[in-house]
Length: 345
Ligand code: GLY
Image (cartoon, rainbow, N blue to C red; front, side):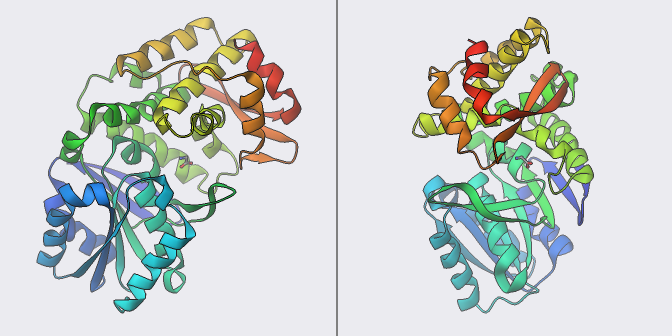
């Protein structure tokens, strides 16, 4: 088994191995304790993975209950959050009990937020069931729900007590969903460790370990995103705009893939990085069937980017590549975005 340690405001382990789901109860007991456990999962994951987890929790002595939310981003809202909180209250959860997120980013984010606010905070454990959640959202303690005005607008920084990554679970993902996670894997190659490009064919356990080590380092240094953590948003400001413009028909990783290529092309046009930087990125993304170009006008993308929650006042921090493995953060006036986006065409 591979173990990566996070040393943020709270210390915890990320466990990575095939078959961990059937032993998860023991890891949860050790990391979080408590008598009751609520497993929050979505309607898709529930059908395939929750029974194994519930059995494991019961075998480890937990009084385990389950709350299933409808699959999809639409569930990440205040109403569903309130339902999870009420479910915990109706089941007499105390501050010593534990919430377990079994699923992708939506489940992880909403369960983490429910744990952050239930009785002013209870422990929770992340069990990511997608590659995307395993390498990004399950680690680092960002929790949130969406508001009608935008994604992730209500949330809290709240670190989990453990992350349990059973890589056998990914066998059940459709190819498109599996590949979706590789946009974030390749992102780590661009922002921090060029060698990631050379290990893309290796075992998923090794890939996840490498990525979460990078993320853990960044979170240890800048848990509350006042500086370096922003580099994790590489490709995301443009990517989020694409995602919204596509009406969410593009998956997150697909939109981020196009966003990363676009920002590379912009940086190359400005002489900040070489053309070969975008070529290396494009080649890696295409190996996983990820798109590398989204056909939206500079004007539409710029308008969408202005509504990004990361835009503050009249500027937005863009993460620009210097070369594979190195990026810089540049404060960019919102009014220059349209011209900038035209530059990279
Ligand atoms: N997903 C970006 C972060 O955790 O900071």
